[in-house]
Amino acid sequence: MNDRTALDLLLTHGPLSRTTLGKLTGLSKPTASQLLTRLESAGLVVATGTTEGRPGPSAQLYAVNERAGFAAGLDVTTLSVRAAVADLTGATIGEFELPTSGPRAESAVRQVTEALDGAVKAAGITRDEINRLVIGTPGAFDPSTGRLRYASHLPGWHSATLLDELAAALPMPVEYENDVNLVAVAEQRLGAARGLENFVLLWNEEGLGAALVIGGRLHRGFTGGAGEVGFLPVPGTPLVRQVTQANSGGFQELAGAQVLPRLARGLGVTDIGEGRYTEVAPALVATAAEADSGPYREFLDRYATVLATGLASMVAVLDPELVVLSGEAIVAGGEPLRARVQAELGELAAPRPRLVLGSVREHPVLRGALESALAATRNEVFDTYR
Image (cartoon, rainbow, N blue to C red; front, side, top):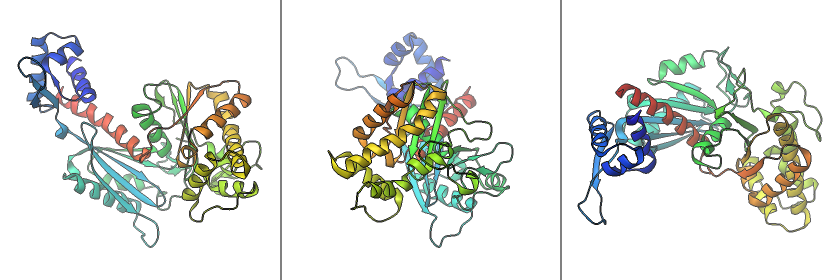
């Protein structure tokens, strides 16, 4: 227990001396020295420089051996597969993005291996050195069938044998996780929900979804579909029947990023840019957040209302401590949008959780995949040592 505590402190604080580590753990200096000797002999800790700028003799510093283990993460979307590799300290040491739209027609297995190999090469290591890989996708793999559900828009990922094919192609343990769940992991480990055990994350980007963290753990549901709130029936839009065939539902049709340009036009906004909705919607929301009056202000108010409409149902059931608003089509609205959603939710729901904007903005799905893979890798490395 002391050895693992020491490793966790070194991961959190960076290089530490024997004396400092002893103070943080409550261990005597001789015991801290023995502990560091054990970890150094096992290759988990390395001596790295000495203290400087302090009175008295310099002290040897120790740090986690960054090369004692490697973790990898993948973010799979309809447009690309982005991969990254992190060393044991959590530093990203290699990244690669593989476009998957247009004329490319590689299988899912080929996409995964090619993207992973690109990141591994950038990191200067080999596939065999990866301890754990976590792959984030829309939807979720049903544990009873092994098939991807709730993501019919992701081509090439629905074969009944896909997981077996990936297992055969990859030499390391692989985990699969819903993309929005991984954003919640990133926010819980590094961002706006750090340390919290009960919160909801609402995501609006290519799709509208949520992640539920209850008792400190992700709640995935029986088929992995917990949080697929885009299918949620809500007031203000016609009922969508056969939702899995339509790949949509009431909340998606009311507040999803793809409907925002149409919503804005209906309120008199005319200067809407052209392009894919995942680019147009955030720009539209960002412009509206700066408006004091007129159609843009009306659009922001209406957008806040429709977001709060779906959130009201969620918080009525879950009563979370916190709601994290994330995804480019939400965070682009900044504090003006957050404040409006908070006010609307206060009128629509009895529970009144605090609303915050997500703070992990750069590739949050990929960051969550890496954090998830890192946690498993660190456990594996320490269990091997123990």
